[in-house]
Length: 308
Image 1 (tube, rainbow, N blue to C red):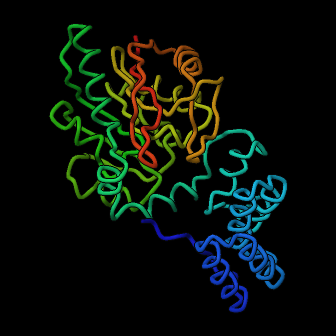
Image 2 (cartoon, rainbow, N blue to C red):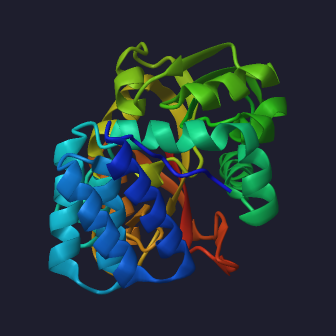
């Protein structure tokens, strides 16, 4: 299990009260935990970790307004938003659904990195790379083209599970991820010719026009809200006939929402429109679950789009 991000207040009394409150929270005594956290905040008004935990408790107690206030204070106390208070604000409808704070994503996956593969495969039954590989094979078969690619870009590459699924079908892999910890794990696989620590859109902007014939994004777009910027860069980087293969989580409504698991979910209609707007041609879209959460398959879509 992941450890919990803690940013010291710089005051020993406040920090100890936070630790006591967290113990109460884990025991289920939420009202008492909230009271102790408020005491900690009185001592250290800019205590981001205390504000964030208080927001979680208020949300669990269905006190939305108080939760929003606490999360706003957590974000103000740590403008880089390493806890992800902004994600909660999106979830509570207090902020538009946009890309998640890079510092939050980096912190989350740096913690995950040492045991990421086991966590995904053993507990979450992660299958996004296998689903993408099957879909790409089907698209290539329908096109009567070989499913072999000279240069592929793996967005949100993590530890390299996507590259591993396509290893026999790709000559050269480039990996991009926000987390240095994940990049370190990916480097150890020997599957990548180059690896970059950066936001996927910014990293793609440095790639040459028409320089890749495959772009993968296995379970990476759940940390992105509006897809237009990244899809535009993907379209530019893909060569004619190249493929984009990605998974998203989905929902029955319109547009993009922040799901209960604090990951974005994109509707099928949104994907259709976003792909077309980017100048790509949708070649494959089907419902499929990329992972399990709390022993329940997460609803998702497997998408393959082509640059004509």
